Length: 211
Ligand code: ADP
Image 1 (tube, rainbow, N blue to C red):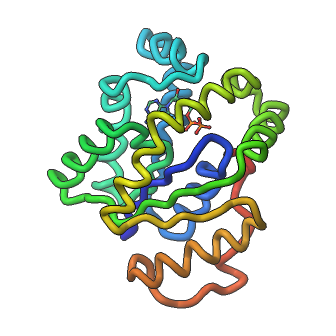
Image 2: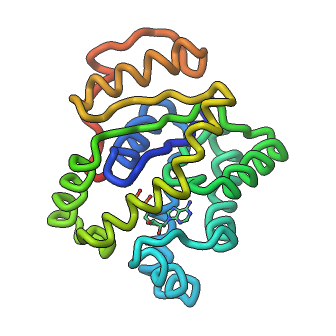
């Protein structure tokens, strides 16, 4: 079963390709951003604490992230044995703790997909999405801050996972079907999904359009 980490700057297609990959593989989709937004929508004390960070585009402290995410990962382990982690880990301390957690549960990640696109394309996609989804953090100044946070806190994970030999870097500045075909080919070549080849039926439009 695939146990994938989706690593990408905001706007590169992490959410879209994560949802598509879970449909292809049957692994559980765990989106840190969705879980955080659900907590905010619940209006709990924890949600108010979370919103203070997410509205500014700052990272939520690791302790809160683990408190919210750990139950979802444990449930994924129980239900499917696989996962697509969308938006986590996002800092080196999170990556190291996730590796320990994975080893303890025999659920170590076996692939990291690093999605890229030029910065002006990322900004334009996010501002476009703002018009549709109305996310509080999709304003120009917060988008620019989120990109800077990615460069400082999350980009170092790319070399960490490349060094572990499990990283695939994919440009999403091209048609979605090409990205999906490359992704499936790579997962097949590594024996992470059955080698049945990419057919037009397997590739297909991703559900939703958000990043
Ligand atoms: P994007 O990748 O477009 O920024 P996400 O939905 O993944 O969108 O994340 C939205 C916000 O949620 C982030 O800007 C951050 O505030 C918070 N967040 C999500 N995942 C994490 C994480 N692993 N660690 C800390 N904060 C997180």
